[in-house]
Image (cartoon, rainbow, N blue to C red; front, top):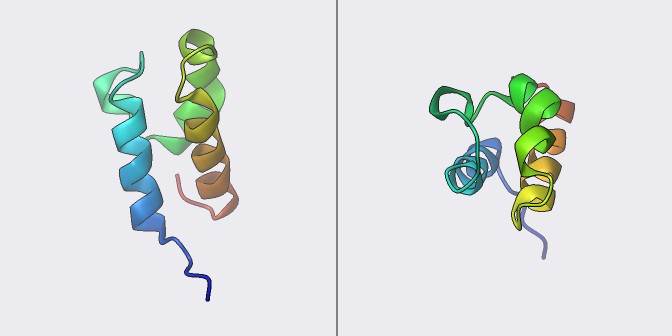
Length: 64
């Protein structure tokens, strides 16, 4: 049986990941901002790929 991850769980995981990255505090869960800017200072960060995938998933779901 496969369980679906909720939007809230994704947002919480994203907040956890971005707290360890070079992202302004007030932008850590702004999906639109992260889509445009996350890679600028974090493309080599060990959490970048996972954070970017979560951002893309939330954006596809219409979460801003």
